[in-house]
Image 1 (cartoon, helix red, strand yellow):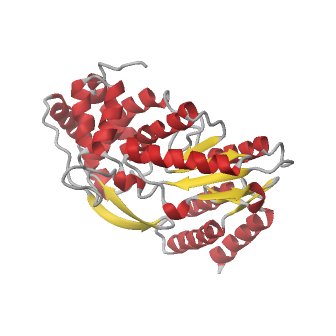
Image 2 (cartoon, one colour):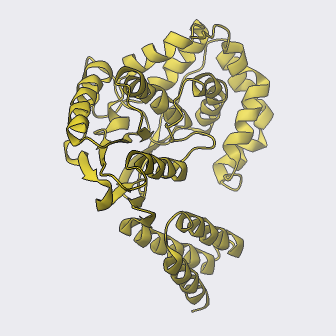
Image 3 (cartoon, one colour):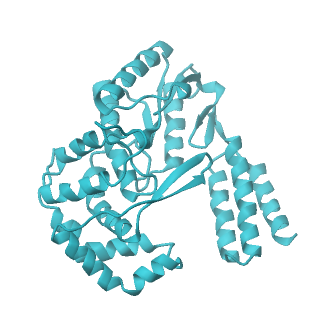
Length: 349
């Protein structure tokens, strides 16, 4: 395993901090807080650089708010200064750990994503069922309150196996300990904030331990994970039950995580497998009903914002194209036509 001993200066370099600012502000440049920070960008970046260099950096508080995406989520937003710092850390750490991730880990990675993850599921089902000529089963699991229960000490130990630069580790520890969830207690700090760029990377680093256990320890071939959702495919249902028990024990013993008892299922491939917004069926796939409803609801909301002059027509059309892209991955020709017709109806009514 390659060890990294000198990355502190790379993280705090002015070049990296300015690059982090450029990455952070994309798509947000019209927001008042971004505009204010950008007015004195050189002063703000040099100030951040000096605080980091002199060991004076202190992470600020979070602002909490709720969203529905589609289920309710509690988001914690750091200050602009801290988020720029998160991007700077991500710029350096992500290439280091990306090399260690398995190919079938699909969340928050370049050239991966939900569509690739669902495609991998379809491919594995086809392979295991000999192109749908033989029966096979799919074990689908979800980790209970994953982001809220990530153990800070365990996460830091995993990172410190690869990073041996003490100054860099202090900065990483500051980010990890900047937030704790309601799942924490007097002995264990827990939780990653939904809203931090670094949380996405830390989640993959944490669950890469599970991935390695599944692939190397249990020698499972047909496995894919997207954040805290994962699937395993086999022609033997009893094998999947045995594997699930081993994974459950590993998660609890090594990562202090639990499988969600109500989100464990073993289904035949012909029953339809709900994964990442789509339902896999032999030779075709459908869009999840909740996803359909959300697409129409969100598109109508965007058109209302356009009519209220809150967004541009180009922005609305980009939303439509984005949703058509989602539908292009499913057997949804009629649904695509319905969405296009509804778009023009709402736009012109």
